[in-house]
Image 1 (cartoon, rainbow, N blue to C red):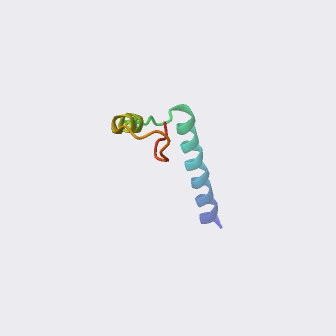
Image 2: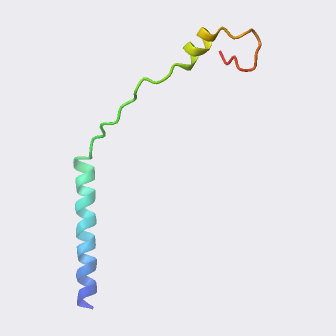
Length: 57
């Protein structure tokens, strides 16, 4: 019974430490948008005929 209560106490302590860290200093992401293919530019350069189903612009 004592081992189970120590395990529960350790879990509560770890969960509290996690949430305190996340709420005070959350991690910052280095993700950024990269410029990809400009579909509109490609379509305009292709000079699609008027009224064609692939002409989305």
